Image (cartoon, rainbow, N blue to C red; front, side, top):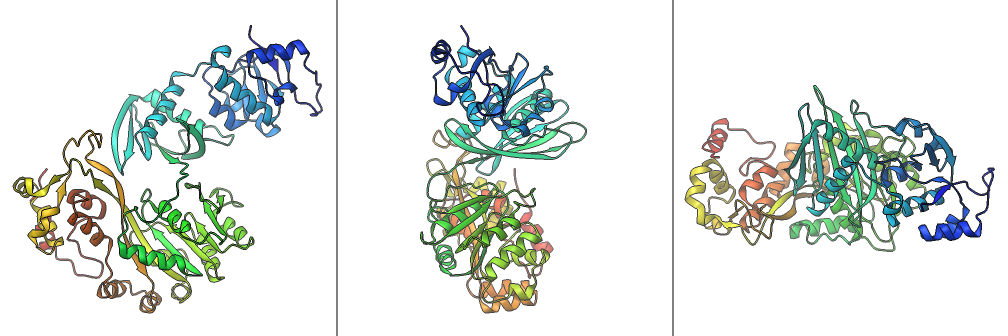
Length: 545
């Protein structure tokens, strides 16, 4: 016998019928009774609409039932019932409490799915399995590209996209819709004709995982959707082991030890900036009050205050949260991303008032952080303040060769030179034409091995450049003399990111091909130098397959 019930809260201004002893016994036999469930009356069949999963219901605070009733936890949720539930049932809204609704969802979708006969739709099952496979394979992103004929599904692993599956266009569009519903915590419907995004933490294989989905419409039909997977990392992140050179670690440690000023990290999306920031925050004394402002927080930082920001909400965007944070007496602030003038101004005001500030920004090198800030409205004279900028960093992630199957270059030297004459020439130039330095260079093995699952690589590591600000640098900044600043840094022994990658090639940890995919030509000169077209074209010539 299936339990029949309708939920009515006590003390909500509605009629309330206490359970009889017989009804309590019946309920206890069918589902595990908990104190909060004693506030219900038994009336009507509790069977959710086919195809709706727990994440969908929980995110919206509603439980649409197959018999035409909808349990809703608050007044604000009632408006979305008719617009969101695709099954056009005649709904009767039954108000309930958040606590009661959560208990019911847990019992229905976790404890006794066979009792109530819940069935997930094929698309929902496929979407759930896609997320599970992505987590199992340590993918950072899932891409679903829907076109008129088919939908291509790819996963990004170690920075590179790999083909995963191909499904029909209708199925692909339905999967994007389902995944958006998994992630959406608002009342809006998914509209494939508009750019949309959503995010939420869900449970995948017992691991709390933040999924962040963004989609854009494509011509003549379809969407491109990218789903980023952000595992809720509980482990303590340390700078050592991320891939920084020893000199980098010393410079970063010096920046972290400064009592005030701003340190900024640049790099493209997915370059490990948040991981580096977490490591820097972990290096700060535990007795300092540090507040992080992120969208969303990616690492659980013990002993720190972590605040979620919402760039679309004027009261909770990065700039607003920085200003609010300043009123709570912090020692330091970490800003997840500086992307607009308002956030940049708020971050620098925090640094000017004697606080430590750490943040990220999108640009192409450590030096170009400065013109990017100027473009956001920060004056060069302010940026040249001796108490303001402490350190500027730029990083990317480079694939590390699998140590078990990587092939020494010397074993394939003749073939490599024939097929990659231009790359070989650039490699020699990067190694100062010292052929003895080729002894430790290794290449990726085609097909890899069992240990690396056929990829030929073993994770990724940071390749970086770190600029520690000095007085001469501030003078160059004030006058906008960036080429001269670059030349000054090189004269002082500073090394750009390309040199860091070359060090990894010398030690056999990174292949020359992977290095150039990440940082460009190994022989390319820095800013401020003349460009020799004939020499450049000769270096590019002779490339094989």
